[in-house]
Image 1 (tube, rainbow, N blue to C red):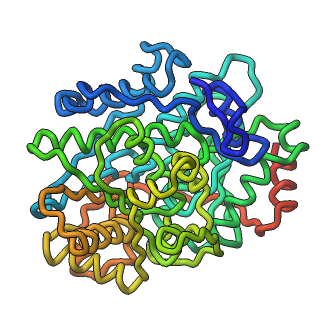
Image 2 (cartoon, rainbow, N blue to C red):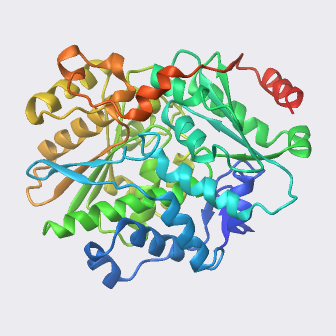
Length: 436
């Protein structure tokens, strides 16, 4: 499979080049030249396949012969070695639990797949790979664990000072080995801007072999399609065939992956873009005007993105007919007070605890179901992170019902290591050049 830049549709690069270059020099994002439609027999019988089997079939169709079948199978069965169940909360309301991987967040799907793909493509004697990643919370932890100890790689994680939870920060800063953390005095958008500028800086690219582990990297997006197909497979086992997905959205890689799955033939009735106060996309879906703005800090910090990078991919998917996008995607946004209210409502109704991002997705689904009155369609809202990662959000009566996994308890015995930097590019560049 060949890939092109969203800023130059006539360009062509291999999957390997797209993975290692991460972002084209023209500042677009890579997309597959052809999006294959999976055959109806496979789609209609998804319930007879396991998650790794589904992942392998989807990846083979997207990547073609870029990775031989046996090697791709090894990568996927190693990377996707945890489950992602849908849990019924009430009639036609299901939660897709995506937090059963090692970092307790949905980003384990993308980070583990990408790290193994990069390790596979790295040839002996090649220049060290420097992975730059900006995080608003969960990406950094998933990338850190995905790349920890991978030979000939070094990961530099940028995160906004004071704007990630304590547990998220420990996941970023306590790994050592080939993982280092930079505490940026700014927002996630500032961190993301530093990473993007590094990729277009001539001096840095001459000295280092730079790539990104953010969702701007196509190797992060592809494995996120897997759990959409797998969720639908689980619905088929329950005798249901119509589905709406409510997706908590920040940088919009998650929704972008769902729309890519739809393009490949997954029969989804509707996607719901659920955001916090950073409502750039819901505003666009309502007004038709796309107006990025500075991000604002919220309880759902992993979604604090005012200028989502992956929107250019979504726009590219529907460049022939933007009205089709508006007919397929509905946007909802909620402030912190509404988020807290949703957390309480989910606990009171189902005795189930959701993180603030997941609460927003639940509220968006419930509002959509009330607005549209579709009785025969299953609604699945994505649970993107384990609630234990946000202990300060919950009152005691809810917090006491959260089971703390062992990998979180052990974090508190480790020492934080990070370097504080401002949000200016020259300071970031100086750090990279000095700390070779």
